[in-house]
Each structure stands twice: as structure tokens, then as C-alpha cells.
Picture 1 (cartoon, one colour):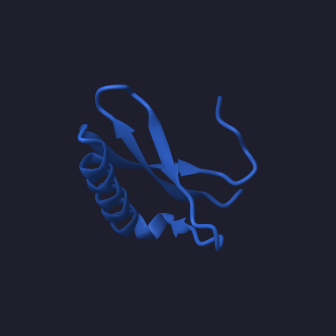
Picture 2: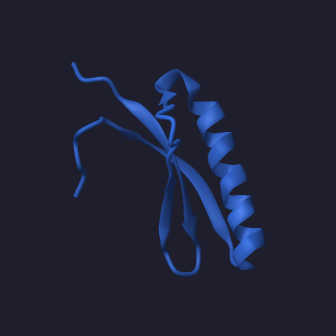
Picture 3: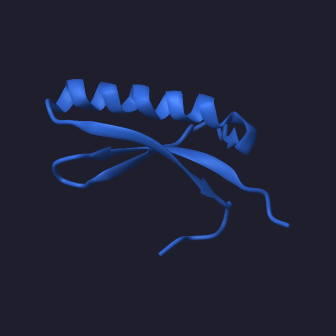
Length: 70
């Protein structure tokens, strides 16, 4: 069974553009850290909303390293 992780994302509510947040040091959110990942995503969305003056929504998704979802 392959290990799954969570990735924090923010989606622009006007344009639909989604940005994912990656830690350049390779840190990942384990599935057991869902609340922490959600908080991180929401804070990133708030930062983007302030910076762009548009509404952003933070959310998390599960992913498996090495598998690309089309």
C-alpha cells in the first residue's frame, strides 16, 4: 500500500486558479495532521486574499507521491 499525504491548496473564487503550497525542505502533512494542513491552507488563502484583493478559499487534498492526477 502506498503512503498518502495531504497537500494544502488555495483556490481563487473568481478566476478558479488553484495554487498548491509546497515546502521546499520536503516537509509533508501526514493524513493524521488534517487539521494542521487545513489551518495552513486557510491562512495561505487569507494571505492571498489580502495580497490580490480577491477572495481565495483554502482546502486540502490527499495525494500519493509519484502519482499524477489528470
